[in-house]
Amino acid sequence: MALNWTRYASPASFHPLAGKLIPWFGWGAAVLAAIGLWLGFAVAPTDFQQGEVYRIIFIHVPSAWMSMFLYVVMAFWGALLLAFNTRLSGMMAQAIAPTGALMTFLALWTGALWGRPTWGTYWAWDARMTSELILLFLYLGIIALRQAIGEARRADRACAVLSLVGVVNIPIIYYSVQWWNTLHQGASVKPTGSSMEATMLWGMLVMSFAFWFYAIAVVLSRVRSIMLERERSAAWVAALPEVGSAR
Amino acid sequence: MAATAPPGVEAAFGAGGDGALAGLRWAVARDLRLAMRSRAELGVQLLFYVIVVALFPLSMTPERNLLATMGPGVLWVAALLASLLSLPRLFATDHADGTLEQIALSPYPLEALIAGKVLAHWLTTGLPVALLAPLLALQYYLDGESVGVLVAGLLLGTPILSLLGAVGAALTLGLRGGGGSLLALLILPLYVPVLIFGAGAVDSVRAGLGATANLSLLGAGLALALVGTPFAAAAAVRIALD
Image (cartoon, rainbow over all chains, first blue to last red; front, side, top):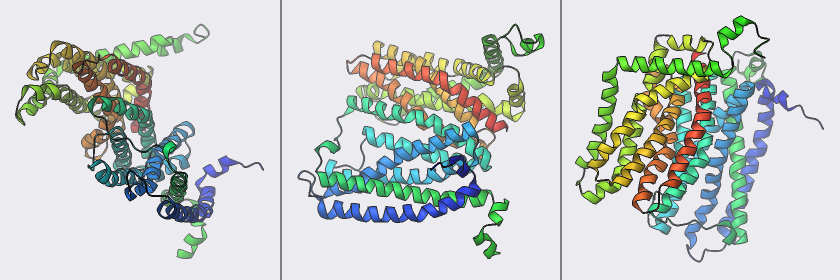
């Protein structure tokens, strides 16, 4: 089956496709989250070192992974926008930014809640935490730049440039802070996947897919709103059944 | 290629790399001349650097060991802030009076012109900051070797600040509220690696570990920024002028 993917670069044809995809990913996220939480809270054994506290891992790790992943996806859409000047790419990048910022915030917040009982502190200038904080600033900077510009097309391209400059920085931040930190203090190390009980690992993986599906569903629904808002004077919007019935 | 081009084209665009180099030289000379005509502004920026550095010992017990531990970080943070404060000078005045549009229309490659402006910016902000640092380091009781590494780090790191700053300054051109605090939000996270390596170099010397690793990484960062940021900044200027 040969699919013409570029067909969906047009908002007019992507709007109905996104509408069809949202329930699949939304319900998929709900079902996966139910399975993941059941695995995490009912099946996975108590950790012999950390006790029950470790169970925040099922929220913390997926949100941290998604925070990094979403940034790269956002920068990818930015690159597509600058290379091909497709309208949809900028809208996708705009739709991803708030979800990425939310994931980063969740990762930091759950990390603090986890750190208090296990390390005895909400916050340490540990490599992971610092790099995650910088990531949050990058997201907020991109959102703030878009708000300040106002005009959608210029905002799209400016945010694309900024996110591409930032994506080069992500690995640099990550490793630099790690090296820097070794000189100051040896912060506690998180449990690594290899030493993990199989059910814990499965719970975490299923929860990661739940977060991923959630992010897709939310981004698609947000991008639908953005499309309608930006193209409100276009003929295809006026032809939509829901728009027609509202008038 | 050049031989087949009509003579007028070559006169207008220059012959390949010469055009880029000529543009760079022109932009450096112009911005340096402008900077020399407002020397007071440059002096104020350096004074800002000196005052910020002097604030920290006043805000706590000026204990010798504590100051020597904090010194490299404080000097670097002050250098970051001084660079940030001087960024609007890079494009904003040229944008306000329309010169930037004329510059973008010139036959020289915009990337080269921007690289020249950044070089001039560094010569008038980053370089003086690096040269002033040994004097201020004395106030923080840093020893000779640490001061040497601090200056080497500043010489490698401040050009990165100017290069990255050019992207931020171009992105915030002509935005509501002047873009001052927005510029800080955009650029300071990107400055973090420079701060970490720069201050880390001095720390590792003081810990007896040698600064080679940190200085090499600063050098690598400078190489990367030199290659990438003029293009990003040129793209941002074109977006702003659209």
